[in-house]
Length: 391
Image (cartoon, rainbow, N blue to C red):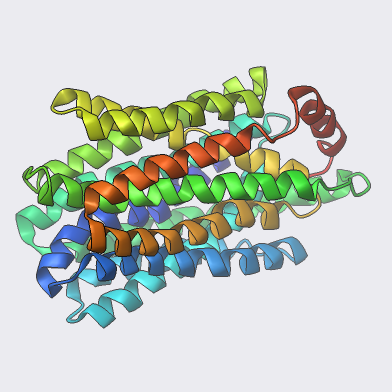
């Protein structure tokens, strides 16, 4: 395992996903600035998710077909610079276009990033993917914390300060291109014959990940609005609330990788997604510190299994690992973003409480699908069969 390259890739992942975490924290300020309904607020989240997800499989196909390591620094620059410009957008249309630009940067980075992380992880693929994923989780967690403080202190224009780390981190990620070229050359030289795919298992994983992404995006979108408009909490509390949700998810990602290696992905997913709707119920029913704890637990349960699901998906499509990664992260994020717009309509019609209880039901559906996954014995047998290839 090349820990230095993984650290650089994880840092780039942090930068790209920082924008995903920062956007929800920015929504209440944008809502007030442009006088937006819940639908148009949700449309920003939908635009972010759809641009990154629809294009991500295309970048995944390109990555599998030929070396596309240049997408790593370009993706970081596009994502962070695009988001930085939001603070200077003079209209809702301008904000929408810049959110789309940041989404395209994410679409560039993720498939090549996950493929690259796999290529330098050696035999510890789940652990390596967890290291890569935790960078993104930390970025998403820091996003609301930093953006809420920046905007509260300096206003929306302060988002423009992100242009500095955009160039610095892009340059750092560019230093990983040479060692990645060498690592992937070794992979190609030692690759075995193509391994069989498991499309049915992959489809179930995509369905689970799509429902989970909808719950995840719904929480990031509507919990800040619920906190302000229903519970009447101060707007400055949202950064800490989302940080609790996202930071526990990052910690759970580091824990879930070794647990999945030891006990199996299916068992890890079943336990996590069984607890997720219970934790979300706790947030809606509790108050005070218990509410924070419940939201943090829901973050651990929802976010913690993202990386292990990707590894299993790569093993289901072992000759197209970038495409498998893009489908499980990109496509499902887009489907979740589309669902958020629908939930936004429901929130406009029936209120935020109804919308959040709907997310509980969706989380139950995701858990139910984990029971359809093959048994641990069959999964391990297929992992051994597919494990020799690193497309």
